[in-house]
Each structure stands twice: as C-alpha cells, then as structure tokens.
Length: 256
Image 1 (cartoon, one colour):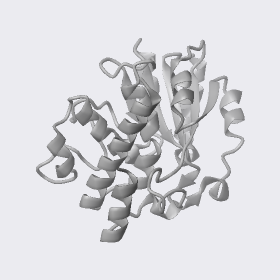
Image 2 (cartoon, one colour):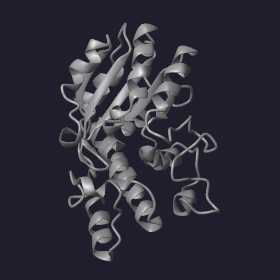
Image 3 (cartoon, one colour):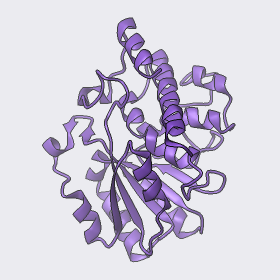
Image 4 (cartoon, helix red, strand yellow):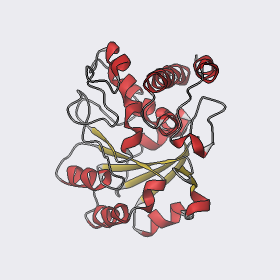
C-alpha cells in the first residue's frame, strides 16, 4: 500500500482513539498512540507477511490494546458505533481488549504475561504470531523467561515487537532502570534483532516482510503520545487523559 494512504489511515485511527478515550476518560491514551503506525503496517499494508484472517497479534502491553479498535471497525469486525460505547455497559469494547471482541486474540492484562502466551501459541501453530510488548514491560522477569523458551525452541513463526517509546508509568526508562543496550541483550539470547523507526512505513514494511531462520525481535523506536503535540514525549501522559475543551479541540485538530 502507498505510504501516503497508510499515513492517512494511521491518522484516522489516532483521531478515533483520541475521541473515544477523551470522551470516556478511561485508559492509557499516550500508550495507544505510540504503536498505531506499527499496527497500520501489519493490518493495512498487504506487502507485509501478516494476515489478520489467520495470524494473531498478542498485546502483551494490554493497556495499549484499544489502539486496535478503530482498525477492527475498518476491517468489518466491529460496528462503528461501538467506538462511542467504549467502556460502557452497552458496548463490547473494554478497557483492555479480550477474545470476546471479534477479531481479537488473547490480550495481556498484567505486564509480562502476553509474551508467554504468544510463545506457546506460536510453538503449537504454523501461523505467524506477533507479540506487542511495551519497553517498560521488559522489567518483568517473565519476559526473559519466555525469551529463553523462544530461543531454545527456535520459534521462527513468532515476531516480538517492542514499542520503544522510552517511557513507563513513572518516567523515562533510562532514568528508572536502564534497558540499553537493548539490541545486544536480545542478540545475546540468539534472536534476530532489527531496529526501526516505528513511524516509518518503509522501515516497518521491510522489517515485517523479512524472513529469518531465528525468532525475530523488532525494536520500534516510537514517540509516546504521537500526533498530539502537547502529549508527545511527556511521560506524565501515560495515565493522564486530556479533559479541558481546549486540549481536546487541539488534539482533534492536530489529528485531522
């Protein structure tokens, strides 16, 4: 798919996320905005190897899973009006997505759980499995236990994607507990590591289309709060959702 079209689709996804998050006041808006281009590349770009009809994306960073809701609408899994009913008793779209939602696979809640599920699913399947992890999620020991399993069994149909926005709930990752050199850490386990700009569709397309004889890790450098200028790279927005009419108006305008 043409990059300009992908950018239009990604902006539309971000705008709809911003609207249902600010309308409801629930969830982790900035964490959803950072991974949209990754998802747009996987779901909309037919040049990637991922096929949503048979493959699975596992959101190990469960708090970012609502970023998939507008995409599910575009693909016909969910009715458009469900976005307006996000986190209401009458709707099907919850704070964290789950398997009851059409088009969704298992979605992690507690950080560090989804990667283990994804590893088991890929181990027992021939389909492509993608596990989306947050970078601060890498503080969880269960992540590295799963990586040992993945490397030992050489689970080649599993791709780990790290949403490397360099921030967690309490601040910047390199100030809290250093993760770098992250590429070398994954490489030391025997995984095939690629580092990309998580907002560059050429780099994402190339990364998702490359085959390997080893399990793959894509470290996608992203911007937390991407698309809304006053939210970008401000870690406090991990849990804060804009409430004032002015902030909401600015956000919608910048995403239009």
